[in-house]
Length: 311
Image (cartoon, rainbow, N blue to C red; front, side, top):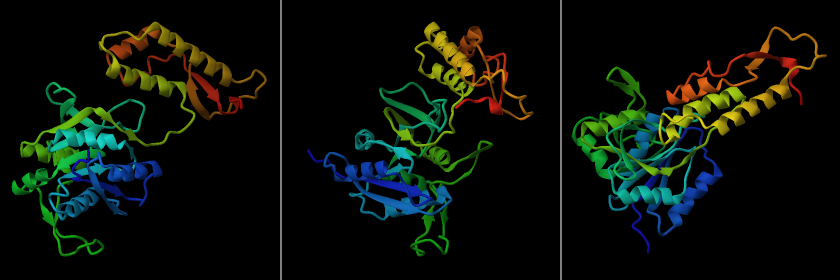
């Protein structure tokens, strides 16, 4: 059965582009009668993302209210399914987001400080990112009515020079911390008693890049950081089978890239360091304490000469 299409996707894109898969998902959402997305608005070429988001809010607020009840921020590097938007819309909340993660190997979601216990799949948080964020129209009205959002004139190079903008997404200092525009918006919501939620069942991709090869010390460091997030019991030790696998992987890596006996003397400059073995007790202890720095876990560092690698 067709649903009411009252969600407007808003995408800021500094470099005027997104990936084909992301654009295809947006078009699929617009044309899917069971997805509440009506249209896409974009703001391109502005290196100041807070200003770009404010411009998109202005475009949204000019739309008829019955056609634009929800603003759905989707960043140009977020991979999603139309059903993810449908899921967020089903909550009918003032502010709700999907989960996406920082562009590193630590499996850290873009949010801060869960508040209280989760209400089913919904977890209230103090600060949430705007990469995949749905905002109900009356949220902007509440912030503006309370006087917490400043008005400003547009620059000469912007569109619609007659309309004043509302600074819903400022960058500023709050409680002695310099906040980005997404986290500051979360605080504006808190100031008008609007909670911010994340739906823990909606997990979208955050496209990034990595420098290859990913050396074992990088992967083990990420593993130690990530395991506590997924452990049933934070005190659980690392499974022996996993430790054994890590140990074998490091040995194989060391054997592959160890310098040959006939190789000339290594230059002073070193490419990287690795090791031959894992200290299992230290690794298990690091995981128990959620350690991020595991220099003590990998021991017996061996310098690998630049000319030691084999093709």
